[in-house]
Length: 381
Figure 1 (tube, rainbow, N blue to C red):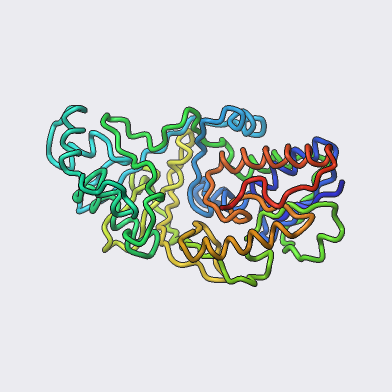
Figure 2 (cartoon, rainbow, N blue to C red):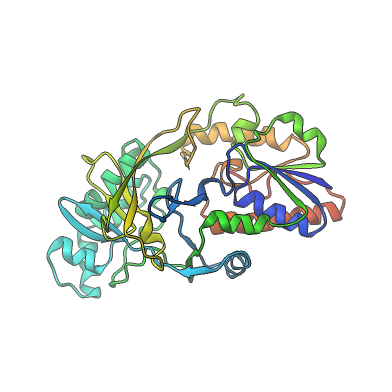
């Protein structure tokens, strides 16, 4: 079969590789001038620092198959994300851990004592938290919530946390030990030569052709037996039901000679600070040495028609609109919607790869059994 993949990020690369290895001819069209989507990395020509052009990505997973899959195409170096937060003129470690609690409250609590202390701070009258704010108040109390969640979340989402569902804060990261590794997954690391080189390795197959700076047009589908579409779901239907809501990011890039902040990620929880965090990119490759440094200040705002969509909002209005687009998609033959944009869901890289592997295998099974290929292998709703 001749299969068209729209977008050259992880979803298309992984599905395309699986189908090419199964003997199908794969064509990928990408409107940008590079592969790897928002995971794109490149060397800064002046400092030599590997820069995460669209913001930092750290690979972490409990999925052994996904971990082994990415290592087929790149050497991964050990990396643990240790985030700091500047709040009220002091620096703390995140996620909230025993050190954070003791430092913030000026105490020397042991784990059991800290559990009891935080439970005494918590708003225990909230039996069933419905909003982000209620979730935070219920589990850490007003002081920690105000310091580490309220301001940051308000800036990130552009609304009061009481307007956000509790599900955004599904698992409140609080640890009653001194472990400040931001993630809890078994496998964590960074591709030695960046994510673009990793995706390049996945795409390195004679059955795959990639066309950059080539926007998708609906007429292209006529030349192919099937389309995998990883672009915006609403965009495929020309926004006929309206635009799904996203947050986007603006980056203020600056350089520094030496070490600017001593860590890869510094959050700013105070609402008075307009940016959410500063990332210093040479710290994402700690096995390298660079005299210069490249840093990004990140600002979150509503996503406009010409902006890059980062975080799907998925509040009530968006979910109602999404349901209408899902109905349209399911009545469209010959197209499968995949990935973060195609399913309007926030996905970590490992989940994106897992779903891409499952979609490719599902496609091959449906073709073998003579069944129609579904619009979604992972339902957006």
